[in-house]
Amino acid sequence: MSKPPPEHTEHRELVDAPARTVYDLVADVARWPLVFPPTVHVEHVEQGPGTEVIRIWATANEAVKGWTSRRDLDPTARRVRFRQEVSAPPVAEMGGEWIIEPAGADRCLVRLTHDFRAVGDDAAATAWIHQAVDRNSRSELAALRTAAESPADGDGRFLDFDDVVHVNGDPRDVYDFLDEAGQWDRRLPHVARVALTEETPGVQLLEMDTRTADGATHTTRSVRVCFPHHRIVYKQLRTPALMSVHTGQWLVEAYEDGAVVTSTHRVVLIPEAVPGVLGAQATLGDAATYVRQALGRNSTATMYAAKEYAEGRRMAVRP
Image 1 (spheres, rainbow, N blue to C red):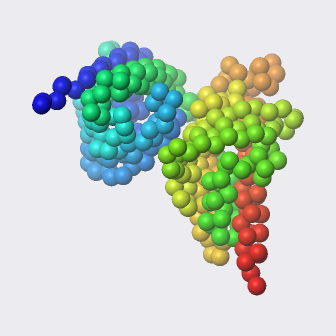
Image 2: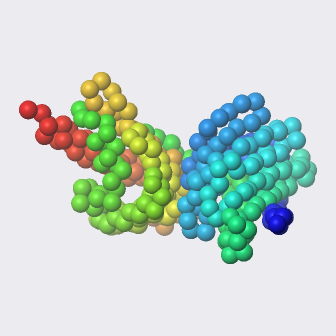
Image 3: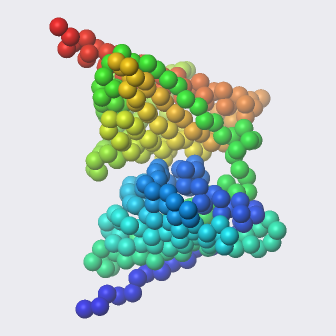
């Protein structure tokens, strides 16, 4: 029996920015977690002239999926073709293309196409994929327009910073402490409540109530992708009021007889939210300082707790 033809979709968005600017955003997958709401993390598997293989984790209909895609990049024609090499059920096959067409000197039309098949050509799975593709495509195109028309780079909205702690303990114990976030409400004084699920090994959904310096609490919800025993990357799906985007990383590296732990934060601030959170006279600079201090304080406290845990375990096994 022959297979039915694949499903096809196309979504479009007019963007008030030069076509090349938009193409560069589409081509640079390292920036996708900051630009596209569904994208949690992207890694390069291979890179060559005009082609690359990427591993991507993203939300789809409230679930987190991971897949591997090959992309062919044509900066002259401003087109990026993609084809999944390893798909995540219920997707059996998927591909498509980003097409950026000039519509004036500083305007362009972005077309995002998809073709796909569901596992077993199942009707319910096909409907699920249609919904996910439609939701994500609309979200991505709207976010692409915002990023191209009002870039966060250089206007004070974007923060990127690290905090570092040295540990006289086993790097694996440090990693285990960070990986076992489901126990943080018992291990960290600034965590009031935590709920962690891990339906797919290495992909965690973490919801947490965090105490602020003034005694209030705020709730965050994050996806974490874990690479034992070295690195955990995450993206908040539910952020505090001042931030539109917050991604981060825990990096554990062996150093001499111990470890170095680095916490990285990348944040996009919301200028309109500043008066309501920090007061009518507060500036974007005040918000940047506030967020830098709050995130740095909590992540550093977490790293020092991991340090105490790892160093305690080392001392416990010494004769």
